[in-house]
Every structure is written in structure tokens, then in C-alpha cells.
Image 1 (cartoon, rainbow, N blue to C red):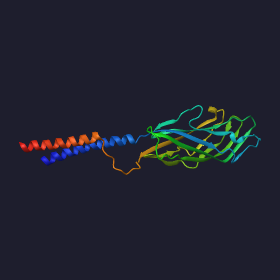
Image 2: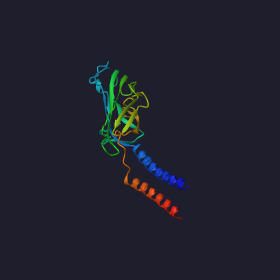
Image 3: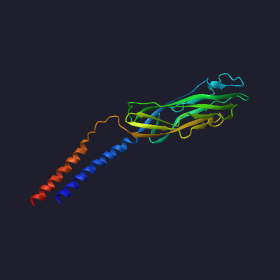
Image 4: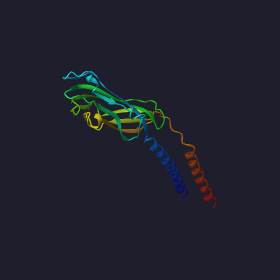
Length: 227
């Protein structure tokens, strides 16, 4: 009977330590990420203007995070949806037309901090794609942005992250629709995967609980033996 009770005490102590470990893991599993983005549209490749519009390459641009209207950084609590920025279509004059054929674009996700600190390593994944379609005047667009890939993985410190584009194609609205802005959305998931293989030393509080439990178990056994 003494052995059974002693084992129960040890199991209780182990359970307390396990709960503490799980709580710490839960905290690590939900990183808060502050980020910027950097998006570009090739101003030359595949762009033509039958109407002879000068500087046709500047008609579609990408508004990164931050910009003049969104200063600072984006902040998300992974896993979460997030904005990579916005494609913007400038308005054309009546009768003007610009064609896009396999015009490259690229959007880079730039983590700034993870849980308030700058991570190391700090990988910055880039998602690429192509624009195809025609913009006519100020209120007509059938341009489609097609992403080359819909998922990319990268590491930020002790986290392995996956950035996913929910839709491989994105239809860009003309300038008269919401100022010609189309948001590029993504989802991010993060898994705690520490780089170091060193065994984590328990915190002083956890050690104290464990030692106190063992001491209490020994005292009980001595009291029973003296009866």
C-alpha cells in the first residue's frame, strides 16, 4: 500500500510539471507577428497600349504595407488571415487602353518582430505571379493576377511558418470601383519548432514544486513507518 501511495504522489508531481510544460508550449504556439510587405509590378514586360498611352507601365501598381495611408507595420496573432497589400489600377482617359500579357509581379512578406523581438533567422518569402488582361478607360478592367504558387514556408526564429494564398487568381477592379484597389489576402500558420536541441532547464518554480512533492512523500512514509 505504501508503494502504491508513493507512486501516486510521484504521478501527481509529474502531472503538475507536465501541465506547466504544456502551458509554456501553448504560449509558444501562438506568436504575434509584426510585418511589412514589398510588392512590385514589372513596368515593361508584356505591357502594350494600342491607344499610344505614354507611361502605360504605371497603370497597375502595388500598395505595400506600410504606405502613406497605412503607416507602421501590420500585426497578426498567428494563425490568422492577413493583408499583403493592394493592387491599384489607375484611371485611364476615355478611349485609352492598356494590355497586360504575362506581366510579372512579386510580393515579399517581411517579418519585423515575433513576440516583440527580432527573430533569427528571419526569412522573407516572396510570392510571384503574372498579370493578364486589358484596362479600358476609367471603368473597365478584366485583368487577372495569377499567383505562381499558393503556399510558401519560411522560418522566423523558433517558428516554421506557412503563408497561403486562398485564391490562386485575383480579379483586379477598375479605378471607379473602390479607387481601383484590390486587396491581396493570405493566411499564415506557425508551428513552434526550436532550432536548439538543448534540453530546456525547468524554471525554479517548477523545480520547487517537484522537490516539495518528493519531500512531502518522504515525510508521509516516515510517519507511517513510525506508527
